[in-house]
Image (cartoon, rainbow, N blue to C red):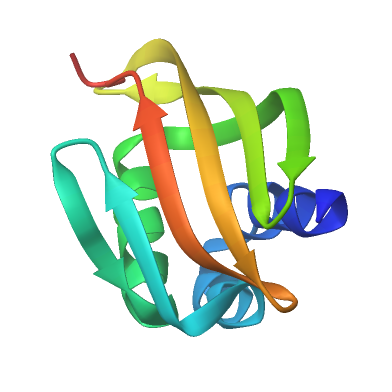
Amino acid sequence: MDTLYRRWLDELWNGELATLERAAEALVTDDFVGHWPRQPGLAHGPAQLAAIVRQGREMIEGSEFELTVGPVVHGDLVAARWVGRGRYEGRPVTFHGHDLLRVDGDRFAEYWVIAEDPTA
């Protein structure tokens, strides 16, 4: 599961925008559900996840995400802390977050994220 999380970060959050849909299909189940702060169940399935990731990455120009803690694996759960960097409206931004993902088989089935708002 350590490798799966590293792929999550490298292929989805740091990967090429042109391959987001393919990365999401490889990393999450068809019935995947993603939860963001104040938006439970925001993403359903790989296509919606890819669209949300694309929207966020396009909002933060040159966004890059770096693993700072973990991943920590416990049963079917994977947790990690990361730092994101990029530019928002021309100014540099740095923001931090925590991921918690539930694994089903060889892919992620559910995702919870808590993150600072880089646009604030």
